[in-house]
Length: 316
Ligand code: G3H
Ligand code: 13P
Ligand code: ZN
Image 1 (cartoon, rainbow, N blue to C red):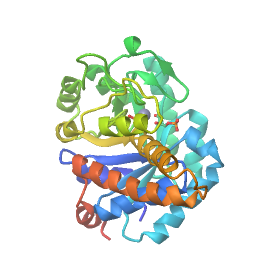
Image 2: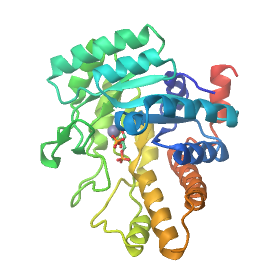
Image 3: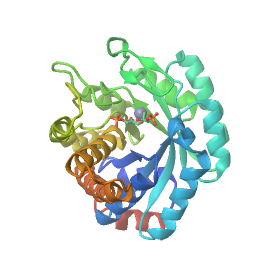
Image 4: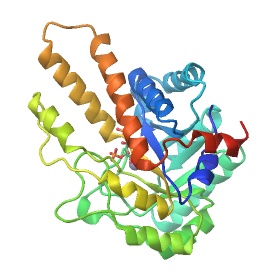
């Protein structure tokens, strides 16, 4: 069942975080649904601009509508990840999305507010909620490149003004994480003081943590042992999700970790079975491994076992 993103946030706020997982293809979609049904967790399917154009934007929409039929117990929202203005407007019109992210964080504060306000007005008219970003994450985003040392963390006072003037429904905060497999150098880590500051000023307002992959070291080691070359890859400590959830983080974005599962499965499969060439053979292994990974992550986010609470909240 597809539900409004804001309904998931109402149940989750202060208690647990909902996993927002990016998908690009059939196998990721199947693994995601299986893992969330196995762990009885609500979830958010994220589709990026790159994922929409990987084949055709209609392909992923059709895929998740089919998965909704195949997995009648699943409860999820559909979200555009890191949208620009045109893509947001297109998703608002599509009838499939529960929420969109407008990422104008690279603009000045006033321009970011102006763009976000336009998207919020259009989205709210259709019952769709809006995630906006204030501050800049390190690393590479789809259409924005921000070098680590120039990353700007979110300013809590500015967040209050931004939320009030932009009309956004949840806020992606820059708290020291970055996208991809190479996060943090030295003793850097999550800036919990920023979450604390925002929660004090905006109690009850849902926050979003981007760049939340944990880049498991055993996964990296297995990839490298099977011919990969990921040197110095490092991620977020997944045991810190619970603390972030208490501080108002209701959505935790995870993409890179799923890519690592895919890479490990396929590298090991073809290393160990060089005679094989049927794409369905590693595909089956990947779907099972991805479902296991998702189930584990939902445990760390505290979203496992929450389907009954969501069902009660949405009256189904
Ligand atoms: O934040 C970026 C997400 O990981 C999506 O990545 O733009 O390569 O699909 P992508
Ligand atoms: P990771 O690269 O850490 O998985 O972050 C994904 C993300 O923030 C998508 O918006
Ligand atoms: Zn992101």
